[in-house]
Length: 384
Image 1 (cartoon, rainbow, N blue to C red):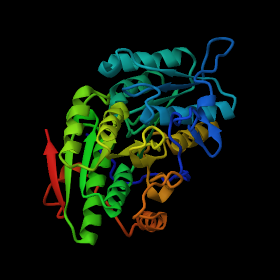
Image 2 (image 1 turned 180 degrees about the horizontal axis):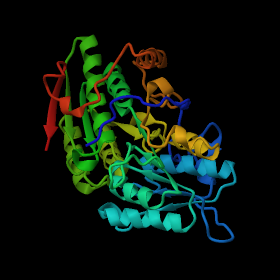
Image 3 (image 1 turned 90 degrees about the vertical axis):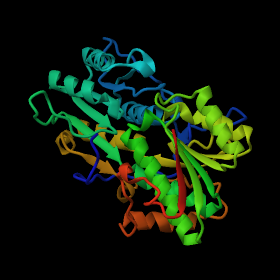
């Protein structure tokens, strides 16, 4: 498993920490807006006279409108394309959550056959198919979201692939710290990918570290259930909802769900038990009244920036190089516009964020170090 070790390329990227969630409120009002942008009003496809689409998006597992990772990435594609008069289309690999590398490659080939100039591929599971596509279609550029540098079949760096990743451990840390400072002492985490997704793992480990540091400052010990059970497919499931319902019944107060639509299982369990949850990737507060805060990363903004580099003739600043975005670039955080916390204030949050940004607070990004010895103030239980 490849892991981001250092920032090799710094980007200027401003993330609005008040990202609005997808969907609507109880009155049916559209809440999928950000700085006045109504993302739902932007068409999901712009047809061209000859059937070509110059910008393509190949989805990760799960649905396009997952109100999380896929949707956040896609909205960046739509925003840039619509603002700049570009045709665009999304491609979902065949067989859904059971998609193979062949399915993913077929989706990329379909995009290239439709005259895509640049293809955005979301999720680390795209690696094998993306490396094959980039080697075969050398004149096409690719953006690899949650990715890392790829090599061709001869071991040479594929400079037509721009890998972008995030310091999710920082965003998770902020969420865990805020939860404990707010007063929650019985926490949970459930992640997608069965424990093999690097981004999800960083979110979870950061969450545990944030909870630990806040508990240490308060002089208390907190409990945390931690699992990837039933989350392998990134999809909501009755089994996952039953598991989390049991957590809530036995005293868990708040659960961080990380990975596609599995959040729907957690939101449902939280609502049934009058308990709370934490969203991920985008501000999910409009999806459920149980959402206290969300651990964000700048999916829309990073896609818009990368597409801008491509069309400005500066793709070589990204191609073949690891771009890592975090607090320093304002690319992670908690949404302050939908702030629901009462004991942990926005001012408290801003001070903590500044400490991450200037490097005075650092967070381990290696989930292999997640254990009870590393978490002195967290009774950490791995649920298998």
